[in-house]
Image (cartoon, rainbow, N blue to C red; front, side, top):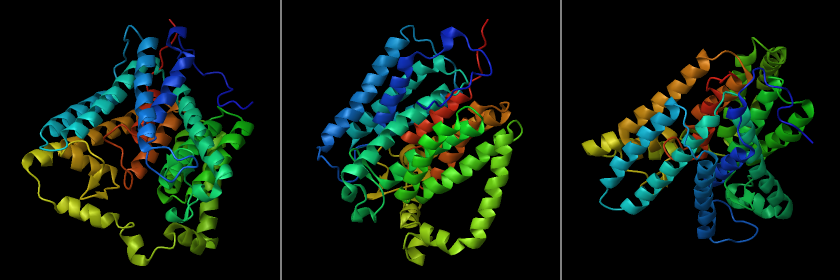
Length: 402
């Protein structure tokens, strides 16, 4: 049986701060909540309301279970969650000013509030160890298992022509970008733990290698680029303390140079995905939506507070940019709050001494920063906020045994 963290911790943590086993279940329920319910056709057709019931039910269950585990409501101060709580207030201000669609916006605000409340309840177990990184890997690895099962049971549905033959979820409706994102995070965190000597070769081969294959099969450029850059940055953060990380950085530099020289045409073809020069240059039509969004007239209230939480679209087209989605829905104040909490996470990661936990946090933060250019999720309950919450848990100072 593989283990993600066979090595003993480098510092002792008080037994009262060690997460109960059910904390991992709370985290898994949060992962289910942010999976979404729209994607490819599934092997067993299920009405979308059923998927929505499952995702929202998992959020309520996560909150109730977290409250049961922490009945005295012991919370640890956390700048990241404080900033997100301010973002929630901004979202409420914008939503209540809407003339139409208030119900949907308020429901999304309620969802974000429940999401944040659950994270606050878990902060008493945020101890600066890699515990929540392991929860993150296991939860998303379980999601990826459903993708593999769907590929085995219904390969035609798992790689449909409507998505250009890219890998999708045929059991739970997952789009190729979702599959690529989850696989990249699982592979990246596992490799970081291996570089830090917190997991063995067998575990790495069993988890990271299949995840890397899924990234490739999803044909997701954002996930591929984010994984590569974030893994290198995380490896650099370990280079001063781990010889394995130094060898990895040197080997990666040599391999990248060789690939750039020998396989440049093949790499370019893969990244283009058969798109024309114009379509590739405007990011598959995203640039046109972004230009229209930025050029649209706004009232002072919409400029500063946005139009309220919605479905991350503009004129019926997906925004596909984390920053512009926040600008649209939470205004310039929302963009400022997001910039502050990302800068805070980066600053804290920079100030922490080198450790496996810091390296995992660095990987998640860098990955989310890169993905935010073409993926939404910085201002609402989403996988990206959950990635960043995991990073925040890894950066909390350890509480030593007294």
